[in-house]
Image 1: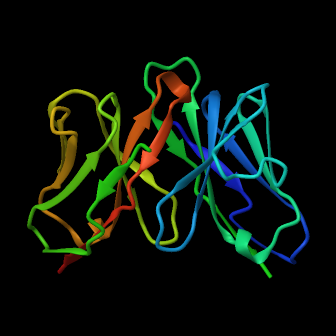
Image 2 (image 1 turned 135 degrees about the vertical axis):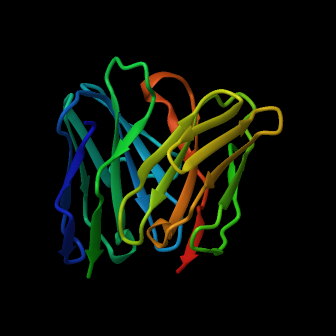
Length: 117
Length: 113
């Protein structure tokens, strides 16, 4: 149980294009989904917290107009990197918490490796 | 600024030995603590969670929590080469399912055959 998927697993795009990453909770409903970014040899950095049906809460320093987050249902959140540039190349990972559950554990998706040329 | 500190390693242990991974955190009000394992190029996978002072055992893994010292550790008994990975300590800030995790930078463990 508690499986989170991400799509795509890997994407290469040209500078200036937009890329959409999907995060799905496959066997549970997620009230809250989280988006992280991880650069090589660095730890995970939280980008934003996404709640179903409401606007995402962005961490300080993360541009909300560049990283668009939509959490339309209890099983799907999307992150769109708009006008991507090479410095946006990173490993993007989502996680999800079970809605209404006693546990506060976050379950992570497999990640999406973005390379911007 | 809430922080989670880990020794970056690498920590090298021989196969069969006990690996001890340590973590300290700055927010005294934290109540939930997690250890994740991350293989190179992969996303983190949950190993253990711990909420109360003392030890919590799950198979070869034992998590230890001391809130007074703001210290949490992970012991891996009978270490195997497949345990070689980066271990991330995470501390939850805020309550319920919406709380954020603050991650340490991770300790790289290498288990030598």
